[in-house]
Length: 377
Image (cartoon, rainbow, N blue to C red; front, side):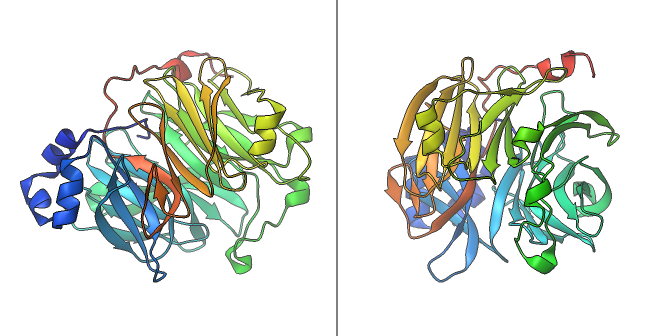
C-alpha cells in the first residue's frame, strides 16, 4: 500500500534486526546511528552501474544493492516488509527485496508482449504485487498481478482502462486502485518514442483490485488531451492527488496538478502563473505529507520544488533545486533528491532517480476512506 510512510531509526533497526545492522559497513552503521528517518531510492553510480540505496533523512547512504538495469519507481509493503524497484519504461524487470535483509532478492520478468511502466503497489496484506504494464500489441494498459507466496509468479492481469498507465496506488480501503493512464502510446520497437501525441487519451481510473472491474474513469477534456496524467498519491482525507506532464507547446500554461475522490469530477489546482511557468510543464514526482497536510511537487525541467497546502492548494514554498528528482514526506515538509546526487543538503557520488520511498508507516497520520464512501458513478 502506497502511503506517506516514514519510519524512525529505532523502528527501522528493530524491523531489520541485529544481524542486518551488524553487517553494515562502519560508515553505514554510523550514519544509521545518527539518523531520525530512513528512506530508499534507486540510483546510477559513476561507473554507469545501477542500484538502490537505503539512506537517512540527511542523505547519508546506509547500504547499497545492485540492480540489473536502471530503475524508476519504488514501492513498499509494511505488512510483508518487502520493497520493489521497477525498471524504467520499457524495462522488463522488477526486483523485490527485503530492506531488512531477511530474504534474498527476487527478480521477476514481465510476461511476453508486456513491459513495465516503472510503478506498482502491493495489496494491503503484502501478498500480491500489482504492476502497471503495457500490452504493446493491443496498445492498452494492464495491471499485472504477482503472488508473493509463489516467488512472485505472475498469476493474472486486468486492464487499466486506458493507454500508457504510469503510476498507481492503493486507497485506504485496501481495495481501490487509483491509476494514472498517461494516454501516450509507446512500443518497445521504438524505445521511448511517443507515438500518438496528436491523439493522446489521458485519464485517471479507479479500479477494483479484487475483481479488476472499473469503478469509474475520468477522461481529461479535449482542450487538455496533451496533458499526460503521470503520478498519484493519497491525501489524509483519502483524496487522490495527481500530477501531470504536458506534451503541447512550451508557451502554454496548462494546469499541472489536481485531485479527486470517487463520485466527484476532477479538480485542477489553480497555481499562480509564475509557479506554473516555473514547473516548465513537467511535474516529475508528487508526494503528500499527510501529517502536515502538504503536497510536494518536483520538476527537473524547471529545476524547482514546490510545496502546496493540501486543503487550499495555495503555494506555501517554491525553491530552486537544480535537477530536482524525487520527493517524499519528511518529519516536516519534504525530502527532495536530485539527479546530481543531492539528497537534502548532502551530495553523494550517485545520480538519484526520480522517486523516493519511505521505509515504514507514518502512524500518526489520520486515515480516511472518503474515496470509498462516495456513491459510484
